[in-house]
Length: 367
Image 1 (tube, one colour):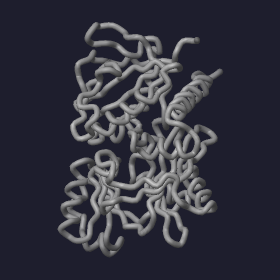
Image 2: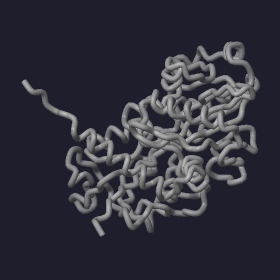
Image 3: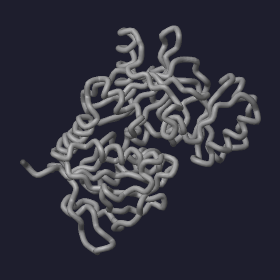
Image 4: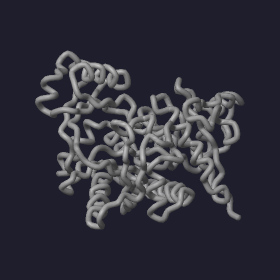
């Protein structure tokens, strides 16, 4: 058999979604086709230090989502931009490690899903799974993403934006008058429902604003949309495809972090969603259009609301969606006929395809 492709699974990170990333990495390691791929585990701890470890020892309390932790007993790493044969330098042995052929980043949230890792991968000259720098950055920022979608004629919820410098201008009555109640307060650059609160009164509003600012320097205050919570996975580069939609049926007030990653009974995931064929097609079309407007490639999950009258409102897009055993992205593709293992394979091939295409671009000018 030909040499296996060496896949660096890049996980962990400095954001509040660190533990989610550990679970995603665990699921990918368990599902990847070992006949095709050799796995290299590249961990980023909460301080931002990189570690080279292996699949047998990279986690502590691996089967307990509440206690799962990164095992730091490993080589410390540095990256060498530009050298495909010596991208990873061990700070422990003071020399290059075996190179990786492609990197599969599953660092959710800031410092992973926001274009920072993607820029580093481009400088390191290695193929990587998922959207590039621009698509990652604009999709991560809820404010910027909403403005781009609005300008493209894609329906979104009404919203207000405040940064830390305008903190004293945040007014409950103004938000209530413009957006109604209830409303949501969210960090602009975070996912997995971290720092998100549903607000019904002034006291909740003030607590929610303070909570959101714990995680970001910019927050979004958004109107509540009455509708079914629908999610749709997108896969591809130039000609992306959409999965069958799924529906989230939260068993709590909304689809919280706990329901997504800790409590398997926190929400019912109806996959595929019980929708008429014309609505399925409408959801898929909106998901692909959102994916393209936000300059995405490889993968993303588009979350939206379906109103009773059939109208669709786009909520957000996730460019490195959760890959845990209860995550919607792989579940939706499973329902659409693409297994978890095959999905990982396709994503890796899309990453290599894009890299090879970009390698053909001219880097000098004929004079």
